[in-house]
Length: 477
Ligand code: BG6
Image: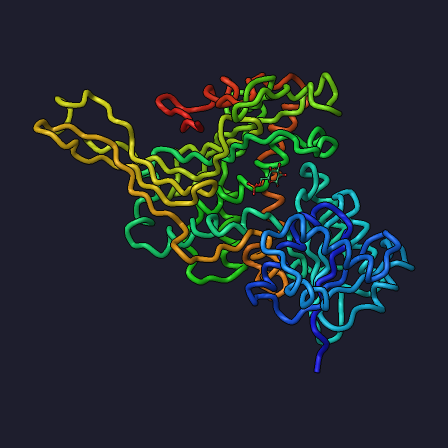
């Protein structure tokens, strides 16, 4: 009989492992979804297994909502630890601890992804006779097109594409997956989602949060690299893809790539028209005074890192020709909102011209990903009363029903990584095309300054300038 597969967390003493991975695995254990699996922590701390288990337990007590001691006893029996780094000595020790199938999760700083992938392979850990071996990588995958390609070249020297699972945690969100299900499982939705009926699409990930202590990472990255290149591009592909005929990882990813491939390239001269960036200044966010970005501890006083980024994209294919897709994301904005919203073209409203004036607000189909996960359809109905007047009504379908168990993004993704379902992971060509789309913008933004916006506001005024005439950003607050 083959030994139980292993999940090796490389960087097991770090923040990602402690805050997100262990709690996700613990909840899977709690709900009986964790398959037969050995958890191996791998990190440079010279701990023994007991010390590592004490560390995991402390993290779970802090970050796992359903922590309990009885469950911990069961969970901890799966856990072991290997101390080491990616030098020959470290990976040899790891190799001795692993039998059979294994997934290596790189919960590490991105600058050592290549070294880790190479080190594991040098010790022969990338293959095992008759068993599977996988490499799980977090974003960011490169900091631009050239570095993404260099990283891919280094990884693919030893690891085959089908062994590499690139995580974008938005793809593990049930509500993001629901975009596809709602689009493709309902005969009345999909026929309307094209340029004949849709006037514009707005994809938003707005946060009230600031830097959350991630100064050194964020000040080098900025909103475009942190959110647009990955999470928003992924939501964009889910919103725009052609229906695949089968639910298969490669077919699905092929369809996502087709969207990215069809995006009209942004010419350097058009960056000012099709992209906008901002940086928050001091203001009030969720009722509290907060400092501006440049006044945050550890930020360079003259930093020109953008904390808000927006794009206008066009998908030059038959379905979407001429429909603008607006993507925006920012920190310290007026509200926490993640959504994908389709605005429908106005119907001829001759009938109501006399009573409502010439224009009405448009209809929207909104996939609310965070908070208040739901699908909303903003429509019009008769205003009760003796005259013929309309008023907007929202057909609101909450995602969760009473008694439903929701799984966090990392729970879904860890399970899929172990079970070998590659559909929620990103194939390298998706990464590459996403960088290709963004690269001219990043190049243009090497000079100049982001526009300032007050913390707690709707974002910089320059974001309005990238909209087509007649379009307005959906209000956040
Ligand atoms: C991360 C970004 O990938 O996603 C963070 O690095 C951001 O800056 C986070 O806050 C948002 O994710 P979520 O799931 O909280 O919407």
